[in-house]
Image 1 (cartoon, rainbow, N blue to C red):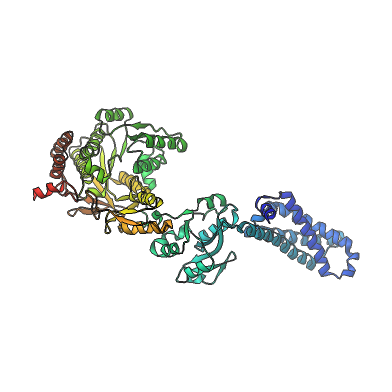
Image 2 (image 1 turned 135 degrees about the horizontal axis):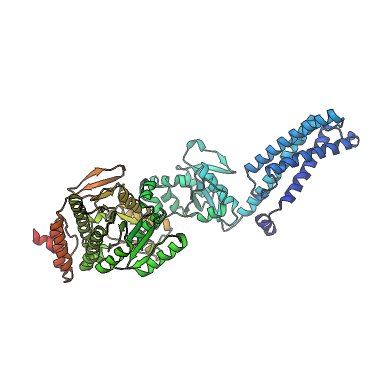
Length: 634
């Protein structure tokens, strides 16, 4: 058994050997045709006729074997298309042989087998050659699937993508899946058989069929991935200890089976969250950035690094990448050398709140686009480090905005957060102050036409998988055996993917005219408790508990994308809107912000937060020592 498995999984017959086998089958087909067409007693007298017919059939068919390369395929990987090539080749070959026999018999008097005899030989030849290939394929599939370590597997999806996945896992001897059936949503597929296995419905009978077939894995085709978000099929399968995997898109070319099966991965919580993806006009964005000098702050962070990747694909003239985190920035540098070795992309370790350093960078590189993603973002940390939130977030943004005006930057795109809306914590308020300054500066230069820089702000919610976000935290806690810590059973958040967030930033940079704050439709918020439960179920762990730790300083039960007094205006994109926010006078707000920054160096947190509340009256501290300031104001 092991010898045969080794033969069928590793040996590839050379083309000349397959050709000799096919010739042998042709000769045998002609001889059998003579036996069936004529009585056995007459065969001795028909020897010259048989020889001429064999030579004619072999000669004509060899030509078309060469034309259609019927001998070039790997027998154990034969497919329907290979059988079709044989059918077409034999049909033309025997057709030419029949016509040639008539012509030669008429012109030279040499006799060949009758039309009926050649047709019988044609049918037998096709049956022999097709059967040989299908038999070897079936034996190969049997040996390759007879592995104790393989998962009994259902494929969810019966259209092209699902079938291609099934083909890929059957053809790759190294994969860990053993095809046991398909799962379909279409009632018309009930009771059907595909690729020798049954099709089962995604209904109440699914779990029963999972048990009956001892299914241990479900592979979901890309076409069915969104369906999982709308049903409870994941929860039902997890309860049966079924591992769920997501396949890559193999619709176009399923023959790359090794890469296909290697790309099949366990389904993650990110695959089950969210909404319909926002479609962005990437060509329009590319037209704005191609050939430009683009500066990105926070370039080593989750958002900044993804902006870098997307901008790098638009063929900019130069990327200037700034971050003060040395090791992550070094990783970005290595990635750039590996993927975009021709792109000039200096990686600069610098602090955006260092005025002289930033001026030197702007003077040296003269950026035309600035994407400002650098910020301190962790809410509890900034509650304890108020001065640093002001000096990095507010002062850093003011320095970059002022330098963008001074050095003629075309567009300045700032990344903000939904926590800036009716802020309840220092971090959110610091970002709101950044928004206020950038918008006020934009209105000023538009009014007096003193500069050409367009300032654009983007607001969005939590980013899936970003540094310090809840999903990586939960994943680590689950791997450690728990507990998974949730601050409050009713807390909810909006979520989006990192690529989506960055595409929004890029889109804002291309559509903005200056001074806008862009927000977009983030769908329904997600309850963090439900998120934790689903992640635990997906992990297959039964021993992980959930522990409620209480709201942290400055933390809301829910985030808002718009303040209560804000309205929205539509844009050309149905999912993207402009927030209609309160406007501030530049001269007044600039002086106030300068005083706030200067006062932060006294490191008197209570006094600094008081000044922040004066600047942003809607800033009301929640679950925080600074709540006393709100009580005093009352």
